[in-house]
Length: 374
Image (cartoon, rainbow, N blue to C red; front, side):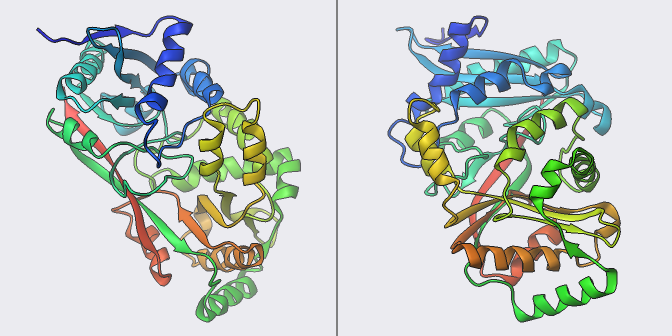
């Protein structure tokens, strides 16, 4: 008989425990970056994705009543319809180093998924590609950027022992930002600008224009559908939520928008200052002093996270990334930026990874999505 028990999260008190558990588990881990508690509450109870996704949360307890693990099971029907499958997801997976705990957590999520008519489960994932995803399998010695997962090295061993197999890997690169664009890249960029009448816009102007904002997110959906693994286009509600959450933090100093001759969006490069160390100091809370640490971090450009780089479909495969990289490179040099961290790239997307081969980039972290038939 197992010495562990599992309990579904059904109350606000349970939810607080669910959110707080990883901060206790990783309290002695210098790489751990706590998520803001308020953001976690919204993600787990009222975010726009829950308008169409279903989910359950569970906590595992030992004989003394101590929490030893947590997990969420999720089903995204829009994903299943788009990809013609019956898959559930698991996420918010954290556990002590004990195979019995891992087995109890994941078997509970699998059983729920089967009850819902699913025949596969994969993860760790979020409801969609907006959130943190992928189990860390390489780069444990590094502090992650704020919008990705971190986990102890024993996690992959635990899930693989339970029959989970690799579905895909995402590669995150560390890129020197102090060198700027190469002469060759500048020549290519200048030729493309002259040939197509492309020019730089201003993210501040875009933020003030509701139609331009809609155009940006429409381009985002179109750009990544079919190009990003497991991508599901965002709903109008999700777009509105993202606008409210992120637009205020996007600044001209770290963001590039490229417009065509008719002032329509052609490409975009969205970066933000690295806030991981500030989140460590905030310890999951904006108040009383968390906001101050974050405000200071947003003015420090030494390290930046490259959240999104892309082009609208008609401008893909034209070399327009040369313009983005030239403009971003100039911006980074002007800001005194030392390092830029790429958004995780699917390892099979050679074109996306080759973009960084022109720089002295290095592997920073590798994350894996696991899949299992149930």
